[in-house]
Image 1 (tube, rainbow, N blue to C red):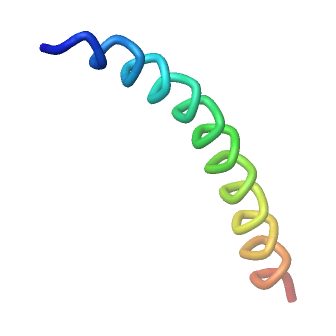
Image 2 (image 1 turned 45 degrees about the vertical axis):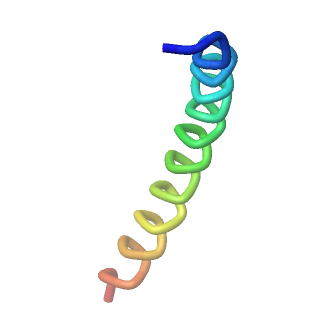
Image 3 (image 1 turned 60 degrees about the vertical axis):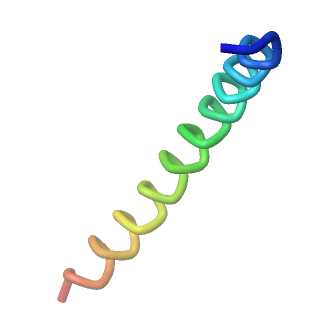
Length: 40
């Protein structure tokens, strides 16, 4: 593992947090649309 691996790991952790928040937001939006669409 080279010296750039540590910075890459930190970069992935920061982006991973943003990705988790984005995925959670998308999940809520799609879930709300599905619930509204299933109601008569």
